[in-house]
Image (spheres, rainbow, N blue to C red):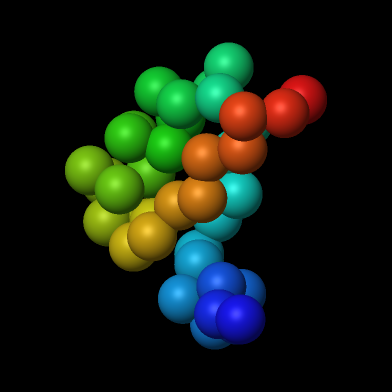
Length: 38
């Protein structure tokens, strides 16, 4: 089992996927986990 918390900087829901891209492009997020659930 992978411990994703060590590699994840943010978690966002699928409806906020654009926020995840904004975080990555701005340098604030390195790896974001996109949840398919609300």
